[in-house]
Image (tube, rainbow, N blue to C red):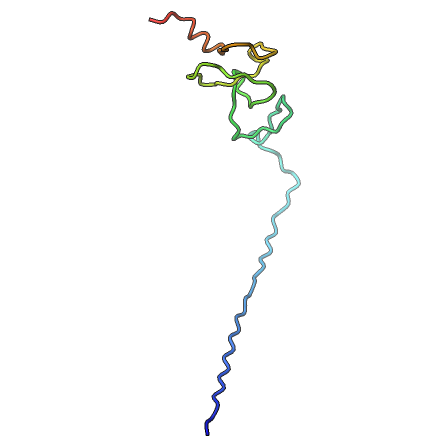
Length: 107
């Protein structure tokens, strides 16, 4: 005959969650610092500080825009109103800055 070995291994893993309650003092007299005052945007869209700006006015893209045909143009995109356009002109178009550069005679 033989004897049966009954090994019972019970592992209890107790997970303890500690909830820390942090109460922040609520001050009713919070005045925004001058840096946090929102700047009004004429286009009615919120200003994203990461959004690239274009045009001579250095604003974000909105409405109809035209691209300068000068490949070396630092700005490249311009608002119609800022460059005096109401519709897209035919042919190539150059921004005032590039037109000023091109007006100089090439040596």
